[in-house]
Image (cartoon, rainbow, N blue to C red; front, side, top):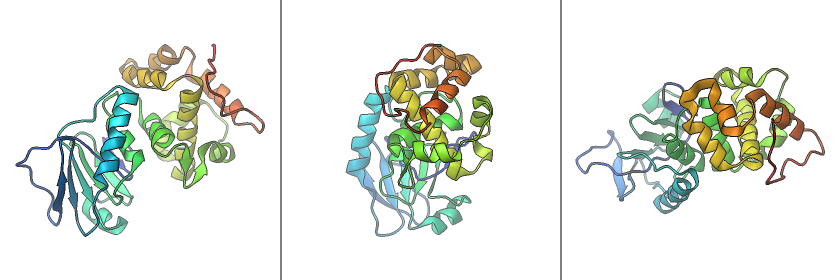
Length: 242
């Protein structure tokens, strides 16, 4: 999870160079140091450095932005230990401002997306989580396709309210919904357009139509139609017009 305070709750992986003099947190042991990042473990488990760095390299190319520098990745034994260390009950916590990540997983695609995408801009937690679910979790949540979950949990109401209310809804509904919508944008527009939207986020409400050529509400209506039984949700190359 990527919160507006920059601290995010969910499993995370951070990659980048760290100063050789920087010390890790108490109780953690330095387990790996590479040109891309520094990794710490609390117990015998070790971060899957090879997979992490290969995925980051791929994302940097796809998103057109580098992973942030001077970052650390801490691998915890379990959620309880992470909660004791961070104060948040989650599989992981990351602070993108400090590039400091705490995780219970040796390799977590979802949070690698958060790390790299943090350099694009900040259109809000709904879109950050949606991108992480679409790319990192490959359009699945708890092993189920997010489009199927979104169809079951999506209620009525304007898209703007859905986007703004992300942090106030049931996470088991909101994450799949956000992932479904952002995944739909990637399939029907392009990943480049989504990245452009992130970069334009400082423009406020104008950013969405500038990036996609239609309003948030128009996109939301088309996405909802795509979730209806029988709709071809997996079509690629489709370009919508306002």
